[in-house]
Image (cartoon, rainbow, N blue to C red; front, top):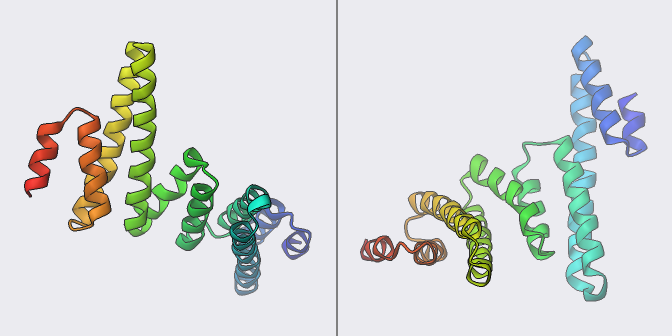
Length: 196
């Protein structure tokens, strides 16, 4: 039944049928694994194809980025441990300026592969969000906005400090960390970090 659902692109039903089959007996485990891998590859390749179209079709880029993101999300449902799928999804979301949505796949590639790009881009997202919240605070003078921007700078700092620990000479991580310290009014820490 899972195979039929797969052919119909009913991925949730396909996965459910495969899981039920394996719960009863693993006689067809090899065939199920192979079918899942083929379905994952199909959606992964669709994601790549749509991403490439987005990069060569400026007028339709957002439509193709959305299709690419959906294909990668479906591929992740099928093979949630595929780091390359999470990485590609993150880059599609970054290119389509869906920064909040890019946080989760970036965190996954950090957690599972200690990815330099993950640290760089996730730290940058939090840094930019903090700058925007700080700008909002400057105009509103609302204390809650002040707390929000400081908490977001702290997120950027936490990500980038972890990135610095893993990649101590990466200039993008070091620059992002320095800028985040300064944005969080931790100039003394930024100065100390520059001397290291």
